Length: 576
Ligand SMILES: [Zn+2]
Ligand SMILES: [Zn+2]
Image 1 (spheres, rainbow, N blue to C red):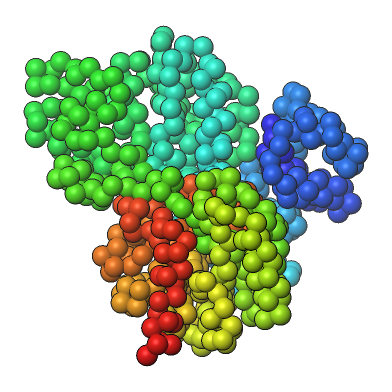
Image 2 (image 1 turned 180 degrees about the vertical axis):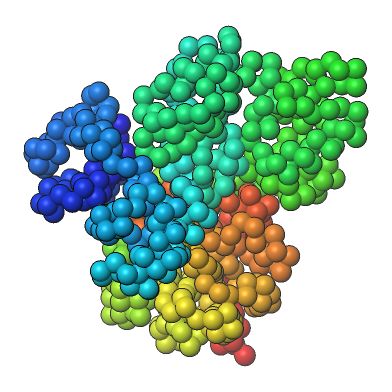
C-alpha cells in the first residue's frame, strides 16, 4: 500500500470516529497523519514507516502497521462494522460533515440517503436545532449533486486504481491476458468505475469468482457468471469481464466503448456482410473471423485502427474511412511549456529546478508564468519582485546554450475586463497568459464581455483555463465560449488546454470548434511543482481526444516562434 491510499483510509477513520461522537481529541492524531501523508507524493507505506515512524502518534502507527501487514486495519473494520451503511453515503453529500450527520441520525433516526432526502423535503430537517431551511435546501442540492456525479474520481486517480487492480488480476491463476477498458482506456476526464477484460485459459466463471475474493474487496455482484461488479474498501468499483481467450479481442473492443462508437463500427461491419456480435465477428456463414488483436478487428471492417481516446462516436469512423482524421498530436511533438508557477508566487519549486526538469524531459524552453499582483491569495508579484525574477531568469539563461527560460505571467483578467498590470509592465514579458480568477458568479453576458474585452488587449497571447471549471467540484462559469472562440480566432489569441487533472479546460469537446474558429491551442501543465510538469501527458490525451494535430498547438513550435506569436500584436500597435 502506498501513503496516498493510507491517507485515504485514515480520513475514513477520522470521519467514522467523529460520526460515532468521539471526543475531538480521539480522531485528531489520525487527521494530522492523514494530512501529512496526503501532502507528500505517494511512497510505499512500509518504507515511510521505517523512516518516519516517530512522526506519528502510537495509535496511528498501529493502524499504519496493520495497513502494511496484513494490509487492512482492524480499527477501520470495527468502525465500519458498527456504522450503518447509509451514514457512509451521507458523508459524501457536500456540506454534510460527520457531526451534522450524527445530529440528523440521533435527532430524526435517519440512516439512509432516501430518508434524509425525504426529511429535507418535508421540513423535518429544517426544524432540527441549528439546521434551518437554508441548510435543508443545501442538503437537497448536495444529494442531487451526488446522484449526478456518483462516486467519480479524476482520471489520474482512476488510472492509479486501475493499474493496481490490473496487476492483481494478472496474478490470478488462469488469466492469460488482462487489459483496462472503458472510460479510463478512452482517457475520459472523470471515472465512475474501472473496467477490465481478462482472457482466461480455463473456465471464466471460476476466474471471475477468484477475482471477487481479491484483497480489499468489500462486496461483489454477479458471482457465478463471467461478469462481476466488484466494490473495493476504498469505494472504487471494478467491472470485470472474464472471457475465453478467443473472445478477448471483440470483448475488449466492446468494453472499451463508447456505445455509439461500437454502434458505428457494427454498422460498418454490416456493410461488409459481417456481424459484430457480443463475442465474435462473424461471416455470413456464421463462422468467426479469427482476430489476433484490435487492429485486425478494425482491418476486417475496412478501417485503420482508431486510438481509444477517439472512440466517442463523434464521426471518427467516417473520418478514418475517408482519410480525413488529422494526424494526432503526441507528447513528443511538444517543444516547451508556458504555464508554470515558481516559488515567486504559489509554486513549490525554484525556476532553476523547473528548468532543469523541463530540459531533462527534452524540451527546449520553459516559461515561468507566476500570478500577477491582484492575485494576492496566490502570492501575486509586485513590479519590484518581477524585476528580481527577470534578473534571476537572465542569470539562468546565461548558463544554458540549448535551453531557454521565458519570461511569462499568468495575469488576472480583472472583473472590468482589464488585464492586471499597466501596459509598460506587460511589455516586459515574452508572453502574457490572462485568466479569470475572481468573481465567478457573474452572469453570462457580464462574464463574456469581461473576457472579450481582455481579448482586445494586444498584450494577451493566451486565454488561460477558459471556463474555470474544477472537475467534480466547480461548474464552469457562465460564458459564451462560441463568442470567445470567434473573437480569439480573429485576434490571434491562443486558448489554453490546461492540463491540470482538476481542470482539463478547454474541454476536449470544444477543441474541434476552436479549430474551426482558427484558434491556436496552448497546452499548459499549470505546474506548481516539478512533478506538475507530468500533467502534460494528460493534456496531450485530451488534445488527441479533441482531434488536435501538432500544428494546432503553439507549444509544438520553437521558443522564438512562440515569442513572435505572443508579441506581434503589441509590436504592430507600437509600430502603427
Ligand atoms: Zn490560473
Ligand atoms: Zn496557473
